[in-house]
Image (cartoon, rainbow, N blue to C red):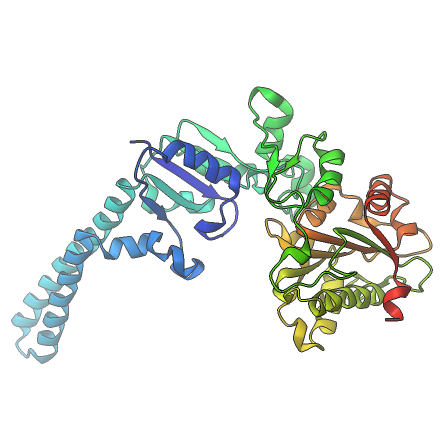
Length: 416
């Protein structure tokens, strides 16, 4: 009987565990009937996985039923206490209530302990590993999901729960957010996942090389740039197109898999908002215009995402989206907010367009890796190719999209 503890870097539903973690779990528990318990507030869970919540399972436990009976008895005694006039009678009732309250807490704690003790797999957040409910409990194996986004100090909370640990994640995607510059300089910015990968390499790492999300044209750029061409697309997704979706028409907007919309020479320069975040109204309008074309071809707005590195651009895009009721389900977010997510079509607004050709944190390889790989069937990059090409990494991205996809000028959207 192997007990497994899965620590989630972020609050997600049990159904959202990454494929690598689930694959490892499937191997380990394929020969047993899995009893899964999810710690945390039930309000954060999807309806279909509510039965796995600790609270839900505790309610079905024998000790919880006994605790319920005790609470009923206490309710009766409280009614008697209100009606009692004799001081000695009141004292005796209060004494009995105190004893029952102590027994009720004990039964409730036993119910929680029984559920966790009988579980094959326990899931929680990293900080959730410090809950009193898990005090003194150890597991045969600890799995930390999205470990490349987890602070090392948070990992150790879960690591101490078992003798063996599997870290699942991708250190070439976004790292954890470090608010303190001083802490980052002193090493907090480097995750345990990254440190172990650098220190031990292939001795301890196992790379999953088949992906089940992207069309191979979207995948190939990332695979070549960051994964030594080791990533392959599964046959079920390698050639899937937007127009393969039910209700979607084959059109000039749905036929390409990768699109580069160049704003160079279109008078769409960046500006700063009041909080000094960068935005580009012209790019925002082009991004919304492309989303509209997709919706007109039958793509559901909920299957489209617009992502951008800058919060000011998110605000600008949302203002434009809200003017069209057909786009109300179109999701708009920062790159960081989209990590771990996917959409059938992704539009990336890169924002930067200036005479000095400054690209800011667009040059962060991991951020662009996340942005492009959110797309399943189409990825459309909207940018000032002249500005972003000042960075070698981004230049190769622009060249890849030009050579393998459809190249358009933003002026074509202005006139449409």
